[in-house]
Image 1 (cartoon, rainbow, N blue to C red):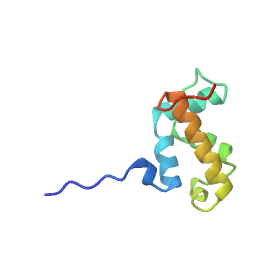
Image 2 (cartoon, rainbow, N blue to C red):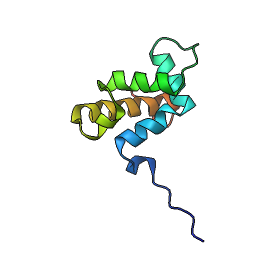
Image 3 (cartoon, one colour):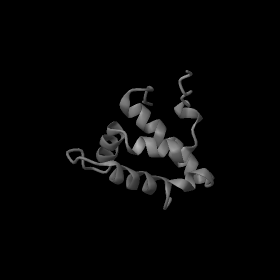
Length: 91
């Protein structure tokens, strides 16, 4: 019996990445902090709204077709990765 092969996060479509991020409690804290509400507990829905606003879209599905939104999403991912310490932040 073979275990299913897991797709790498970076190989997923942007809309799928966005869905996963919005369900990540770390991203929810990041979104709350960025919205000036660090003490508030953001949920997946609030994180999704934050992401849509940052990317200038009505639906995460648009990340698959809107080049400008894809670029904004990539920037947001980079900022999140720096915030979590996954990558070094710029000085």
